[in-house]
Image (cartoon, rainbow, N blue to C red):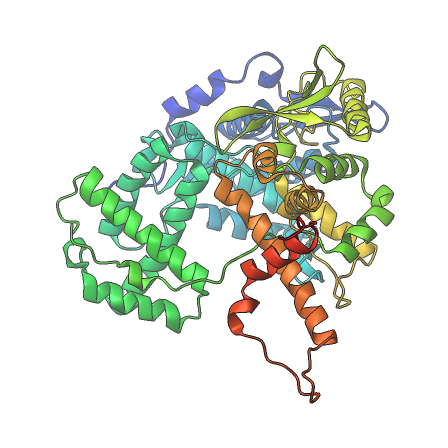
Length: 539
């Protein structure tokens, strides 16, 4: 297994220079300052010409790949580059390449230089935790952060191995199906410390990327990291042919000892079984056992998870404070409280997502990523239509007519809005406005709750299950029936509440205990239905 790091050469460096033509070949890149139109400058003044080439290539690639926009304010980036070049000119004026030293050694030198010149600036950033509490973290000096990005781009550019020979795969280069709203663009095999297991993981990943999404592959390989940790801890000398049933039994105990939840343990086991059986039966790897070593009985029975709609008291507060959301997030919420889209579908709505039929009725067109097909949804709320039209006009006014998305990423109009940014804005807004549940606890939003809320609303309004299935674009009616079970439980809770308030007594005043068969949910629901009907005479 070849895992040698990338190395530089003059020939490879010449290939980098070939990308730098016209404007990008200059030693001075003027970029407009957004505030007043004046120009800032990326100046490449390294004493080492090869270092200038590498620095230019790294920054050019950030512009070329859309990570940096030309009209963004690059004041901090220009300043950081100036300091980096001053440092490089002082410590290594004749270096032929950044790759002559490992990144850690460069970082130590740069941090020392910044401290000695009293320029080291470690900032602070606040992050909102799942408990809805802000925690302050130290943020690295921006010069060091920029240098890391530059070094890794140069390192990747010089690495001419096949992607699958590396220990960190760029899924984009392998043609993997990446969710653009939640990009997982790398597969990391380095935590798998056993060479034979790492090779097995790579063999499986090549096949899985061709048949499943990138996200699915990332989950499976990440779960294999845990199996690798178990082997390193308990069986460091074990080989592929030694994986058997007793080993799996020990692994199950290992997972329990470390306090993994039932659902997490089940996922770790099912993904390990998938990897082993695929390698044995589909990829014909000889040393992988074909015996069943992970049984269905090994999986813990999990509690049935019902749809989690927004609580009524939270929904009321959402509507009260809706106008305090950022405009884009406000529009996304308005659309989703009516349509119940998956967050990925909402983020990737096309710019021209609405159209009318011959009778002037509006429809929403979207892409269903799970089913890999287009989906059309009728729009009956004029507010939603107006919201979409307002967003379309704003995009056109901002000069982003080239964006294919109704909600483009603020950093790059060619990319859709990111799921994590929607959740971040919603939860920061919830903290700011004190959105609390019935237990007076700050509420934390999850994007899928909007979809559950809309589905339960349709159900309570009497919309038939099959219509809800089509509106939600469920592949099976069984998925939609979860909402009916949720409603039935709510009805049962009301019946029990009434029962507690009004108990039946006999002629002696004693509480009558009913036959348990009559307490069955289906029986009670049938009785409730009969009460609402008029029976024929003599019935």
